Length: 216
Picture (cartoon, rainbow, N blue to C red):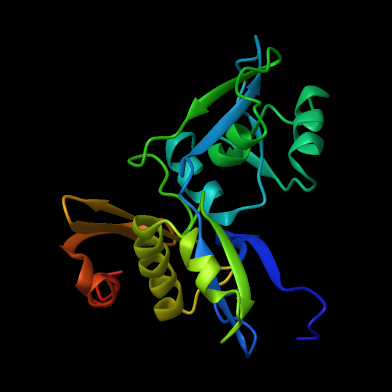
């Protein structure tokens, strides 16, 4: 922590489970679309080779299409779409939120197939933007003003699942919390197996995560 910047803006699903000493999440913005999406070229029906570096996505997709081969893919969204356009893959799996933010869903070259939660549970905190800052910083009050409270509850609950399971990018943990009628519903899975779902009042969200993972 060298005090060279005041805040850092992150895709929340890519945050490490444990933040560096002296830092905290000061704000979370309203959640965007949390679904995963399969992107293919127009007029291309084969799904033999799919590009994704996510073990979670591979395991869920393999349930739907057992004969699929997977190849890792790197680069930003534009780079990945160009690789798809060049027919290096039959399809690639991306986060819907990234495509929406870049206004790519109307792109004429591609088709977009949204995965329902019954098909693919998202990564914890997918679709959430988080703002990291120093603890006890003068910016804390301002950051609270831009926080979406319902998203914050979901963020905290899903992050608690990761913490309890010791999750990192190498472990395929899925978790999605949703606030409904003053309650919070949590669905989660480890290794894309034994999917569990529970609901509790919002104030019990951390206990909810603790109860749910006992059955994973």
